[in-house]
Image 1 (cartoon, rainbow over the protein chains, first blue to last red):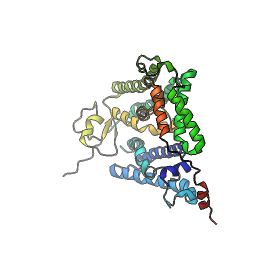
Image 2: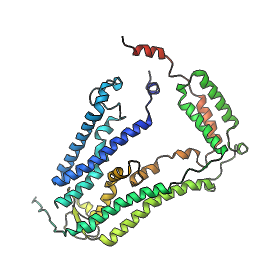
Image 3: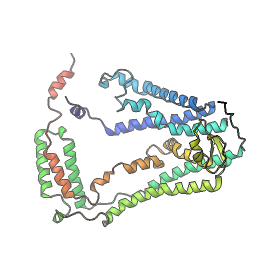
Image 4: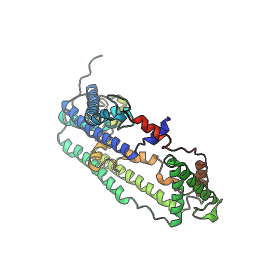
Length: 122
Length: 260
């Protein structure tokens, strides 16, 4: 059966997709700002600050997966045999889920990082 | 290479209260104001007369039939296709059938098209005016102060951007002046607006620019488009569809899904 017919038999609701990715985006931008606060208070500089950000946002994605996605995704038959770490039940692209937070939150992170670094340290 | 000693600059703590805080507060408030100004200025969609609505809906009907043909049974799809194709080709749904075949009117002379352009102009203005005002306000009041140190090193190229108005040659480019805090705010406050106003707010300039690029939904019926040509194209699109239904072979799929 072709992929197009597969989509017609099991259609994807566009509103739900938009809602899911918007929830993800809100979480990412909010947590990125909070990580900036953390990095600023810790007084991290240059590479260690960016490393802190990367580790924290990957950790957020991991937690989001474990808490919200995994329970229903692993239990359902429609998982498509993706196994663990497969988010295709709720999100179109895996890359967006796991690493999208890095790009979306970067500006907010730098802003609050600079602000709190300036207030606490410099 | 010798280690460059870390520069320290003793700054008055009052700089925080009189520069950093005002700029940040003004940036946030401007974003909120821009959001509500856009909401208030959004003009309600214009009422269309019956003929125009019929023309647009008829075209949408064709597009929807073409997009969802797989949910229709073969006979009902054939009936719809025949009816729509006949009506499209005879021009039954046209707003003004007597104008068939003539060139569409110049979009610039059509008063209804000015509406859309005015809307775009308003959005652009709501973006440009506050930015210009705030930038000149910061330049007038706060230029020449070094207020903060970036937590990451930058190359010397950034010096002219970050330290505009502070003409000190040997200063580390990490020190930044008030105008660069403004730029940081422009890019970084998106998440704050997301939090304050909900995620589909009009405060962010990035989203506005993205929205400007995306094709408008109203573009399809825009002025300067000949509806007759659209109808004929749609009739052709309908004619080439090779019909099948999602219910074809559904018994087989059902039986496969049943596990004993």
